[in-house]
Image (cartoon, rainbow, N blue to C red; front, side):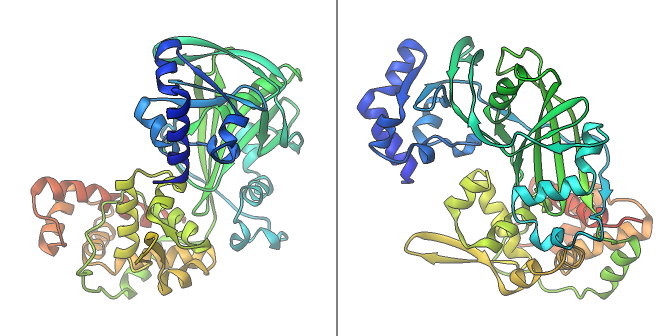
Length: 423
């Protein structure tokens, strides 16, 4: 059992938290009470639904801070799922004079934000000619009241001097952008990360305050701008715009054709299932995490914001490509980069992307289908992918419905490879 699960289960039992929530709709708990079992900072940071400890998930609960020392537990509508990105990617280039912003060094949210600013991403997205970094860091929230959905009802809450942290704040002529930054993609996010800073600064300045969620992974900046239709309602969040900006690698269609020609097809791995992971970009993000250190299955599930089943899909996809290895240990199943994976992750962005595409094209179904794409000038249809999969007879693919599900993964991987080419 994970430490947070164990500690929260003890707290739930000691204070009858679930029963009190059922009676009154909420339970207020202090940092001092939490500290008896574990550090409050570790016990209350659940950035995504999948991170919630078992007692919260079992009872449909979430937790929000209301001061520096108190938290409220209730069936809040506390999270929001990311929407699909709209429009094509925009290709951007790092100014040649900035050697310290090489792809090798973009290993933190701060560095990624600096790179995005230097590439003109933030000015373009926000429609500002100039931006100045201002009010980032940790600070007090001040006092404000709001409403939030809880078990179908609208619950009032009062925040009195809670601690907030703003990853970055950029002020332009017309707005103040408050940015929450991550170096991994996920299905959802905790709205508090945008709402508390928004409410803190909304009444302090006259300019428009714009909450922005910023993600950098796999050489791509993903930006989502939200607004709160009713500033007094936490759950009135709405997407205003979203864009993806891709760092230029110089890869063109000719590079993909040469890679396909020069890549030798290998035998299918006998002990790894055919890929069920739909997003190569998310696999790249997993490789980035494993480049820092090996991780337990449970750690990947928590830190990469997967469900346990998704963790299996993506670690198996990495093993299928020969980039990830697994090992049984007394602590559990540990995943790490293979020697090939380590070499790949040390490459610059251009060579790394081509090397990853090459690892995909070593497998007969992908090689044959990309050849078909280049010959016909259009993406293979689902029926064509199923036909190739049947002929290649990949391991553990038997039923027709299974072929159709695998076909969606194949189509997504082929799209990723072709999207590398920028004429």
